[in-house]
Length: 332
Ligand code: NCD
Image (cartoon, rainbow, N blue to C red; front, side, top):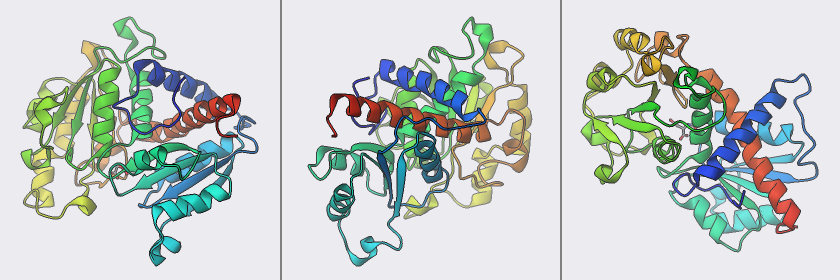
């Protein structure tokens, strides 16, 4: 694999995406062993640099790095010198001086990870853990792994390995503010899936007609198109300055995966087989808003599988980026 950083999925090749997913399968096997640790990154340091709140992504990267025996430094902007006005450059140079081999960055500004990778502030491999509304590549990779593992073998393909050719994936909700949606649209399309979106017009980005997707203006119509998997998104209230819909109850009525729509989803079957359509959510969920409790806890919900796959995918990314840099001495 030729990647030095993982910044986005829009420029990730099919070959590199499959290499990450295949390595993640091996890492998932390690995670299910009694001793869940590999010595691969012994003596190397992974810094988690988080400028925005996070539960699962930060813990997932930390778990992944530790399972590869790396040292982990967790830095969160809250309670740090960032609140005293320190710039990203000074913070990164300080961490660099302490010897970071990889920097996992989450930042509210779209493009922050790319700026760091292009700078001469650090030699570390940069991994984007979410930049503003732009991208969240490891989330899309863990979603792709979850879809691939659940993808129906009746299509003549094994449940593991290969791509998602022909799989119909519907993404629902706040597309406008969602880096998860963007990263998934690019990655799933690269892997051959047919992606459709369902959202109120106010929560669709400008230029959506240039995206490689079908857009539905009604969730019921989108479900009637018989997707193999449905991914629900949270309303990103923290990124909203104005009113994008009348109120939460109205949003739920039109765009939520309610108990009634769960019944419809339970009848949807992957590719006309007896396998039920998959249900995904990146978390954090707002139960009762975009997804009902019954839907979130239903057997076809793969939400906890997504969390487990997150660790495997992040192990794969850290392993591929760092062991490659190690071999050619580029981050000595
Ligand atoms: C997402 C994020 O932060 O972009 N969460 C995550 O990483 N699991 C989605 C969200 O916050 O709604």
